[in-house]
Length: 398
Image 1: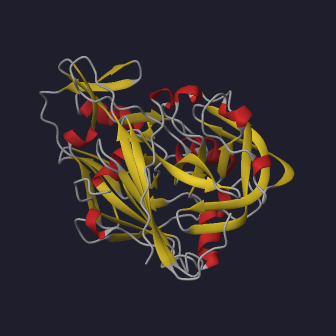
Image 2: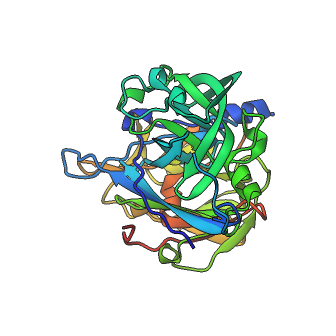
């Protein structure tokens, strides 16, 4: 088995609630060549508030706003170290072109396309992809455009070699983005592209998605990938398997509802034993969204029961309050989040909760990084299901 670890950074707070899911919903109405495992560690940056507490910066990518070398011949897994900025964005490094050029990307389970910025799109950032410097680069002369919650990007589709550690994909179709001006806070963000890990059906490209191509290439030990998101610490993405060191319980398996986003059937949402919601029947697990997000009327009802106040679109409660757990029920099990899990920022005696109201024309909840820090999630591409287990705490990603 090949194991490769490397650091991945997180997006800036100015990219708050960046996502592609809502727009997609609206439009919808090795061998690393033979089979291996790749681990990607994730790290995190902190911003200190006046009271010394870490501040959470929120992003929403795929699920929230859009409703060269030859490959190896032995099946493997690959680890990718994920860097963590503000506990809100987890990002890592890939290599594009021949010879390989390092590019930092957000690994987003809520969208399906890979795009990287060129020199114009980078707008002064140090890392970008220069197609002219790659001997395997081929422009397809087809336009690309995708919209996120914080704006949109555009460019042209192309083909080139893409590598994640020891996993190599020649002639992969992706987008080279030259216009990132629509993304709020782009110049302060630490990443230079998005790598979508959703299904082919929601991709803008007519070619294979990266995960689909990896599975077809036979490089992965198993057709799965697993996310561990550290709390104020690095995280890890494993292609081809999971990292047992970050799994603290058995997996509960739930089939996906649709081969679009990684969505499961939602039975109910419970606030302790005092309040239950059961109208919304779908939840999307989205590594590209920082918070929990749900229909406004449901979020408002939950917040009223928790005694929260709304200030500038954020929900605040007294840090002295003793609140019951918030549990999402699916797969015959309750996946609970405590108040400690839900607090992303403290201001004086008030705690800001990691919950946001959304109205995207389709009733659904998004379980973002707040949920994925508590639960290790295994994305089973081969059997179209999700596995949930308690995440083991601790940082041993070196």
